[in-house]
Length: 253
Ligand SMILES: NC(=O)c1ccc[n+]([C@@H]2O[C@H](COP(=O)([O-])OP(=O)(O)OC[C@H]3O[C@@H](n4cnc5c(N)ncnc54)[C@H](O)[C@@H]3O)[C@@H](O)[C@H]2O)c1
Image 1: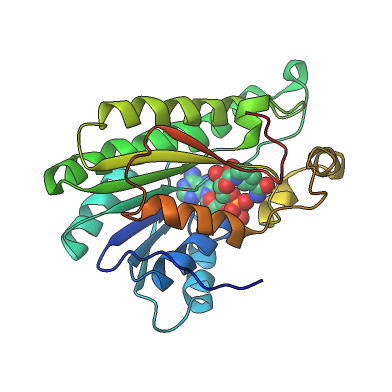
Image 2: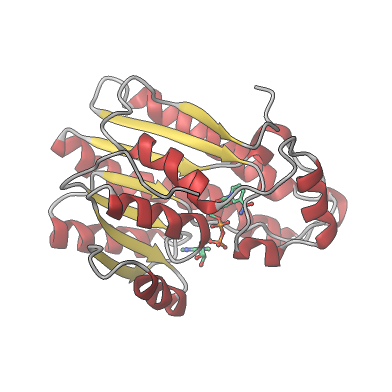
């Protein structure tokens, strides 16, 4: 696959939550190639080190151990990033977990709370912490990584599906709240993408997701990263509160 990125984000600074792995890491690579500098926020310190080593030596990267579930962690990281870089032009919310695969009636309550806290509340907390500085600067691009599960509701993944439906609605609300500014807020809804996240799911659930994709293959992180790079660039100007598909033909709306 040709990996040349056509979009440009020169001089922009981006924060990517969940940036140490998978889709977030691929987005970091694309944004660096587009001329941005990037702060990777992730709760996995070892993975952050590996991610920094995996990115090209020319990439302008730093990293912070952040738990997006915890307001004080997100707020401290926002402040430190702003002090260091002076601005956060781009926020990509990619931190997420799937939680266990189980029916609603068997779903452990603590696991439900954790999925909602990371996927939905974490996205809210990052937006809440960073939007004021974007408003002050008069520019911003926010891209939330939702999921096709948030549109359709996958069986045996109710917490995940509900959290991602919440991310879609949060994106629509925030997009409208900021529509009269130069800040754009959009989300993407990938179908199954081959990342380390598969280790959290049962083989049956992975097979279910593949069977639903008309292209009959999983997505690759770079394919999501390219869409996100456009949404994170100034070229994305008349779209906000939008939900962008990357599902190999699965989505019907
Ligand atoms: N892989 C897929 O099939 C798929 C499909 C649709 C949407 N998504 C979404 O894409 C996003 C990225 O997923 P991925 O496939 O790259 O998974 P991944 O597991 O490879 O990466 C997720 C990252 O989030 C981090 N993270 C988890 N909880 C965190 C927390 N509380 N604070 C900070 N960081 C935390 C993890 O450490 C990890 O580095 C997720 O929001 C996921 O729901 C994934």
